[in-house]
Length: 451
Image (tube, rainbow, N blue to C red; front, side, top):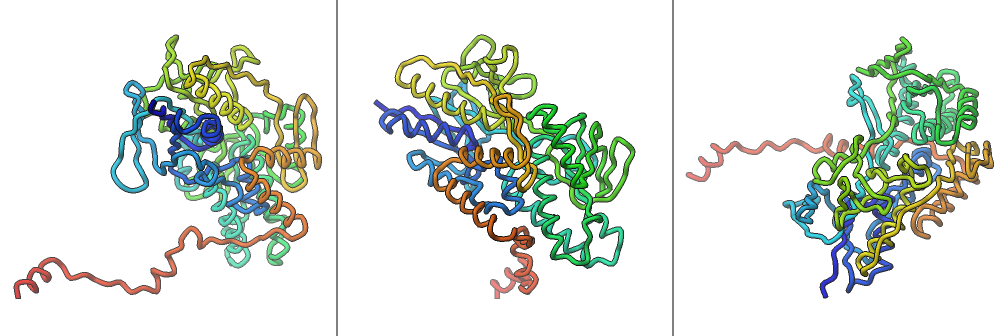
């Protein structure tokens, strides 16, 4: 009997955990698990603020796919098309022509991307915060701005360099803002020419509160704590323009800033536009509680989805959908893998049911908020809960040990506050010292050949 092929599109929380569980639960005579992703690693996104702040090494916030998924086939490439009617997926590898692959089951889990708006200047000025590359770039950029501010004779450039704007008051925005404010505050001790009073952090949030996931009271506490640190909170305010670094807000304020971080929500991966899978009103793949893809009343045999890109009914809250969080994604991946195994062996899938237990958020070093199982916690205990929870959730014992080692060293040693901007332009110095060689034109070549 030929093994069934299970294709996993995307190696995020859902893809990695589902592939890992399937490779352990099904032997290779039963199924071949193929994981397709452009990146050779899974990014544990809750650790992006820690990586950007230098609390942990950036490499320790990602999980290498080939090391973790030894029993799976890893394909480094981008899925450009899914035709479930033919049960084929089209893959564009890193190099070379595209290929088609047939499958028996497919897990569609490409995750989400930043949800942007048609704001003038955002494409040119904005920095996202969804990938490890963006996190490293943000850290280097902010440290570089301190260097610029410390030496420039122009007061306007100095002021713009020391103004940092974050748009979006959810988990990503608040944790990134709080960690980077901590980094700048620590770094200023090495910049005698700069004063903390000159530094300006601005949070722009279109609603009237921040961190809605931890509840109104804990969100209000977080807002008060950030305000005490001098962070300018602009609630019920929208970014209207940022052309050439001029920030224009809906409350009428205008100012220059050389740093703009966009964390105002996410949307399903645009890769889903190139599939024949049914979609909900906001672009998510429509699913049953069993995580099977459904088109109206028809279940699409062999099609599965979960995580940020899926619309999964929340059985603990009738009429609602599961939120796009790591908490749901990890648990959905387990149920999804077990259901595929059950179907491969001839059984019936089970429904996913999980009551949201709450959320934890870091507000910088030794500061945090939490609302878990109805219990509200703040300050150092919440920060400790935040770190403990995410350390327990990052895949592999290897990464857990490395993260704890980073935290332990950071406890005894001072934070590194240096920009490595050359990472983003590694060939610039080489090209400057290498002379340009002009090739003879084609006519000279032909003439030389005739002679």
